[in-house]
Image (cartoon, rainbow, N blue to C red; front, side, top):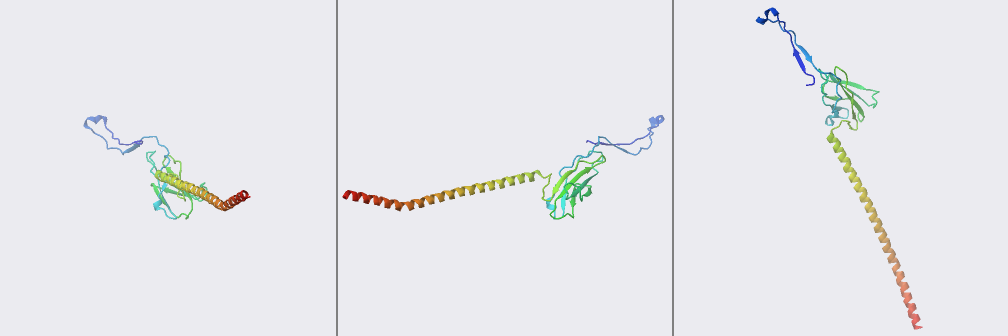
Amino acid sequence: PEFPTYYMRVRAVNSANTDTGTMSESSNVIELCLGTERVPDDPTGLREIAEQATTTSVYIKWDESPPTTCDGITWYELSYTMDKNFSLNVTNITANNTHYNLTGLVEDATYYITLVAVNAVGKSQSVILFNGDKHVNNTDPTLTVAAILTVFVVSIVITVSIVTAVLLWIRRRRNLKDNLQSRQVATDLPHINTETQRSENNDETHIYS
């Protein structure tokens, strides 16, 4: 382990009586932890449990931070506010485990939540959870993939709809053009027949003359 713990105790022995094994009573047990202690690593896995959320509460969880001191993590500090800059109306909470239920929130509001791990040496960097429109910066990868697939499918559906509409418009334009041409031919045909008949009559009159 990174921080092994050893337990020690001491007994005094009289050098004049070593052969008889005479020893004093044992001292108190001393606990000795070895390792280089440092501030905690940044917390990971900060997320909202949507199934346990209500209109005025958010249930959040995170992964347990690994020990970076002999005593491990002392506690976690949660801060939340509706101010993105964390300068107004910030509420601070101390948690001794890896979950917390934030209650008494304003309905339909956006909240910014930070989490810090604390030990005997100091504090970690904070990580941020964005709640309100249910966007979480440390979200489950499967949710991210599902969201991407949803956007992809919706894009395909929209593209197909647009292409279909354009093709229908082109087909209608062609049909309209064909109908106009057909009507024009039908209109010009009697006129052509009349002119042809007149020409034939003139030719007959010329012949008889």
